[in-house]
Length: 101
Image (cartoon, rainbow, N blue to C red):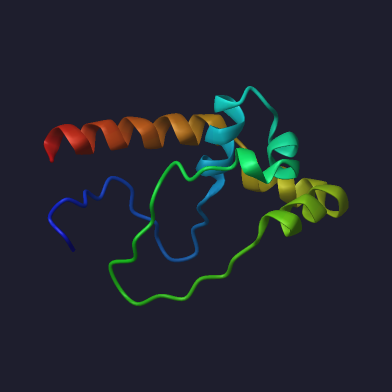
């Protein structure tokens, strides 16, 4: 791992990630998640993910999230459940990691 990279969140096998980026953009633009998903120009990565070992990923693109919102609302809400709290925790971990690094 390059020396300037700092690990501040570990994502374990079976975990999902990426919601913090979407929620962060929604908060930054004073929009709800559904609005941000419709205006993809508002989406900007908040975090970078780097695998430390070989892994496989399954992805869900923005248009599929929008469709999921329409067809499977419970699953959609489960993905974003407590998202702001999760984003706040990640940001706190990031700040602590930067101070240590």
